[in-house]
Image (tube, rainbow, N blue to C red; front, side, top):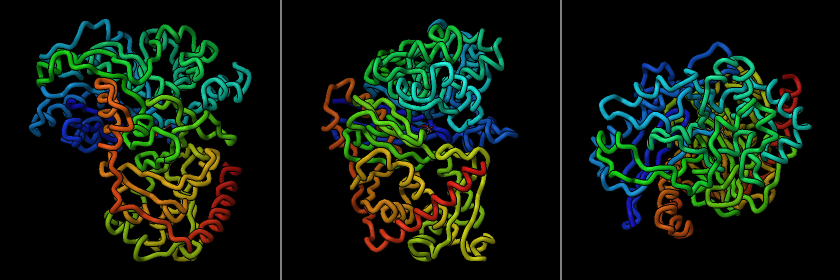
Length: 523
Ligand code: XUL
């Protein structure tokens, strides 16, 4: 029995969840918001400003500074950091960090200087492309062509060559800045980078997150020589062999022992992608339950009985940290799109929710919008495009409650449409992420999916997933046991579907898809 820390380095924040397997309690939570708490990195939503909406990079030093600030806050909060028995965690998927000097060769961090100062000279590239970047269309085509077509990339890696995935991003660097690629000796995902900071070692990438790179052979659980060669020369030398998620990748670095009082020797287990980690944190690592995660990106995912691929080419197969595989579909217009509507009408989240529950009806009296405030991944919409259809007042953007319902209905309809390839329509859907606290959003999801929508009592399932994975790897306690103790569904807030809404949304889905296909055809 013990105390376990899970971290999640996501697009907009770094958060922590600490669990105690003795008392079966979540004992502490903490977070650092990049925009709010580290404003000098000039990234209000965690992303560096760029003139081109297809270019999305972050400053990796912001993630490093957040690690120091998070531990400082945990200590100030009175958390007994010396009680922690093991650590694991997660990072936003696909983002990559480029180092001229492998962390493992540095010989540890000095406790006298902040981590940021020590990491800065190691970087070969000052910025990290992240999952919102959609600038690698050409590289995706080249990779697919080199291995014999998209079907081949899907057969090996579980996904088509995908713009935000790490392989195409590495290829772009190799082509556009060959001298930077040349001096890069170690490439990390955000997940392995955070684990490397914690251990002062070159922590390897885990198979769950590694599957989001277009470089992994899923069946062989190793890098694919074919995809590596199609991406950039000598790439294998810049990546460590991928490892299963339960692998111990090191012990906590002396830096954290001295500065924050962690126990010497605390094991650190492989970090994974935020979505694979969330699958565990939701208690959904067995097939049968789907998860909707409402974050900067909205994602729909589920553990898979057998790997199955999306005929439309948008879905992915990643590794399930509890073993086997998971499906995932990602929508870039998640919370940023909801925030854009809330901001436009100056609504707080309570009024946003009430606009749905009290002021509008399912189907929104025919008012409908296409919600692409940023370039979309699913389906591919390369430039922002927000289109409104319906009453003159709605189309003139003057009907606030209808605009709120329209954004949430559009997101839910798109999720339903683009997740149909996964097969069985789930009867139970769990929901996580900040917006899973909104009654209005849960209501729309329940009616559109005609399924029970249940939030968990913790909204950061990805950090919780990290803590559970650390507990499972150290104690050997079964996931079933851990799920029954820590992933408690918040039944009081379950939204049950209104059967009368079924036909409304069956019709509206048809109209939504027609508008969507017209936009995609014109893009
Ligand atoms: C998944 C994806 C996003 C990121 C950010 O493929 O791109 O969900 O993991 O959270």
